[in-house]
Length: 354
Image (cartoon, rainbow, N blue to C red; front, side, top):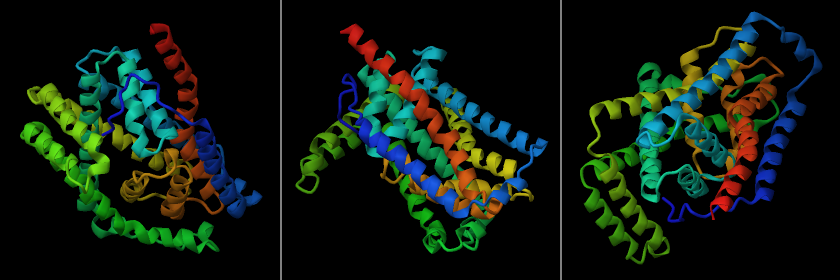
């Protein structure tokens, strides 16, 4: 966790944001130019199939945001109104589009504090939601593997739109590497569970000890405050009733399932053949493992390449890059645009309160 105070306006370097967006658009334009042929448009017809798929894609966006709003409001102790929570969620998603993963924490703490939560409550809410997000991934990944077995990792690279682009084909060989991310997130989930609910004081002592060692000296302040944050989170939530944990679990699973199901809906909209929906869903879990690795803001460029490579076989010839761009519109550009509109109001609101 970051030790930055959430009372300061996060420093967003817009030139980096524009560079990331330009990179994302450039990647999409490059692949479209390489694989698109005018005659491929004839394979798209304004049909009930297309309309249903696009509507379902929009539904996944609405459902994932509503589930996010619900679990965020619940974890805040119902201190936030529905409209205020929705604005925070949209700003949270915006933060994910403009900052690398490591820089997202300070931004989220800021918007939670600006939403009316105390520093301690903001920290606890962020850590609890991070725990449930990791847990949801572990549950969904485990379920997908139990249902599909090794089949979920068998990603062919002989897609027509990948011909002549061998490096994209090789990316599919990384599929089994998703196990590394799975076990890492499983380990983090177990550690957070034990630390927050059973040994918060011991966890704080552990991080304080690590902060004083030479090996971790450069992370001294961050580790010290991480220990404090675990104890704050424990005090905030460890005595919550079972109904609270059940609602948080269900809401988080709905939130993340909807994120992954966006791909199912879009591929259904454009595909002319029956889709193995379970395999399509599982592919998105594998993609997510690589998207959480710190890279460009919003994983710009990386997300497009991964989505195209892992889902190419399900897309009509010549349309893979175009469908990938539509996917990014639903999952990335929509939050970038809304957040860019809302952020100045948040900053202005802070100035008015000073």
